[in-house]
Image 1 (cartoon, rainbow, N blue to C red):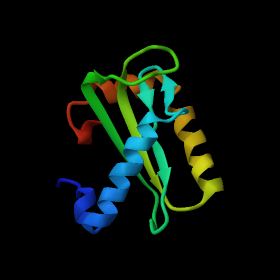
Image 2: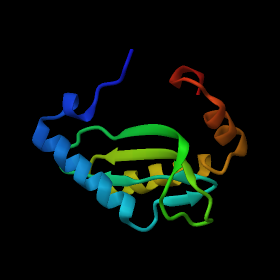
Image 3: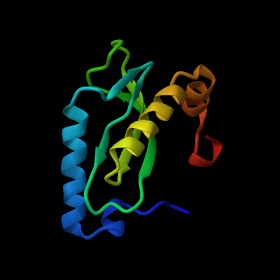
Image 4: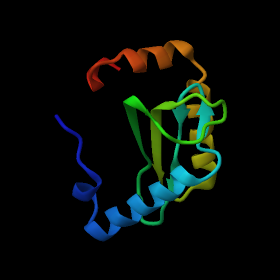
Length: 115
């Protein structure tokens, strides 16, 4: 079953705000974890439940990374306003991103069900 798009979850005005915040997050510092992993993250008023999206790219993204390795794995975090919870979640994701086994498994997965 396909996941809903932001435009299906929120009114168009809200989806546009999320898109704008995502683009700004991608341009900011602190997005890259190295090893080809980036985590753009935003907190927005009105978000009631934190969502995480995992995306992989067959052609790496052209973004600045801490170690110069092209980014091919992206975790997008759309968080409800909770600075402590947001930082805790980012710390957990950063720790997971240090697992070579996990990253290799994500890169080898052909479909969302295999990852």
